[in-house]
Amino acid sequence: MPQEYHNTLSFARQMDAEDPLQPFRKEFLIPVHENKEQVYFLGNSLGLQPKRARSYIEQVLRQWNQFGVEGFFTGDQPWLDYHDQLIHPLSSLVGARPGEVVVMNSLTVNLHLLLVSFYNPVGKRNKILCEEKAFPSDQYLLETHIRQRGLDPGEVIIEVKARDGESLIRYEDIITAIKENEDELALVFWGGVNYYSGQVFDIKGITQAAHQAGAIAGFDLAHAAGNIKLQLHDWNVDFASWCSYKYLNSGPGAIGGAYIHNRYHADNSINRFAGWWGNDKNTRFLMEKGFRPTLTAEGWQLSTPSPILYATHKAALEIFAEAGLDAVFHKGQQLSNYLQFILQDVQKEIGNQFQMITPLQEKGCQVSMLVPKKGRFVFDYLTKKGIFVDWREPDVIRLAPVPLYNKYEEIWQFGQVLKEAFLTFTP
Ligand SMILES: *Cc1c(COP(=O)(O)O)cnc(C)c1O
Image: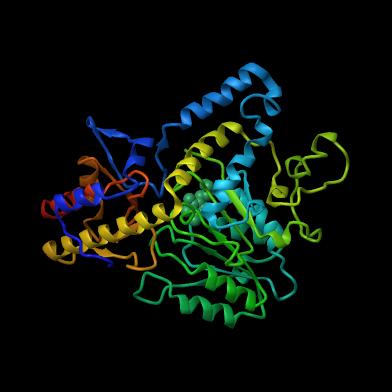
């Protein structure tokens, strides 16, 4: 750990006082538990509401009221140009060129659409390499997508596993698996950050290995976007997608995003499922025959998007830009460092009643703890005390303090209540 930490209220308060992002907490609405602000460590599940989201939604409603369908072309924020406001801050967030990012649909939908374009099985080169125990939606995605191509998921999917007795997948094992299958790999499809363990993967290294094997590299960035620094273009990633309701604070069911490397934008040989919203803006409303894609990632859009969803996304992305991405990602690491320190300190007092499974280095904000037997009790105890964390059956508690609205003091407080929970455990 980079500096000396202390498990004291005064130390935590001093960290908060020195935190350049502290003013941003008031940009968010914090849920309340028994008349007190919750300690909300669920930014990895549903990020909190930016206060300005309401006025941006109201702007859309007003425009709809005033202009009807003309709202697409007129008013303070014509809906047709709204997308342009989102892709600049978003492309910075994921390290892409602006034309490489599109805001559309939601994550699983986008991944299906991207597989249409980037999963191209040819003969025995039809395998997809992925992580074992990927998020269930990703498993269902691959299974059904492969079957729809007339292939057998059991034959096509190669899962890389954690070694026996370990909970993290070793980087060298991923690279070895790619090399071992280099004659048969069509696609390496991986997560940026594992949703369960919080482990961050080396996207650049995996992409390079995939390309050396003659495969495409695509990523699910659900837990990475807004959590860790990404350089998708420079890392030469082929495609990626993410949701924006987790670390990106854009609201329940928020609109998703996708990245497509610019080398593909004008490539006519690529398959896609098209719709009118992906057609070149200049001819979109001429209603002519023959799809002419916009020559950016926007060419992958299908349907008329909702400006109401754009509004919450804009509110959230503005705050990232105002806070500064380096500051956000730096504090994210600091928060999880401090949390890991607190967990180790609690362990010193109560013994090995839980195990921290998130690595000390390759991580973002999230820290996951494995709590055999007492997990559910501890989780309920925390909740009763106003500390909201995430429970994964059968025995994992996930904690995600996030840089834009969480405080070091809340981490200290969590440590106190956690210790109390173990000390008062009654089966
Ligand atoms: C949250 C999450 C999803 C959810 O996908 P939606 O289509 O937005 O519901 C998918 N994959 C991963 C890895 C996730 O963490």
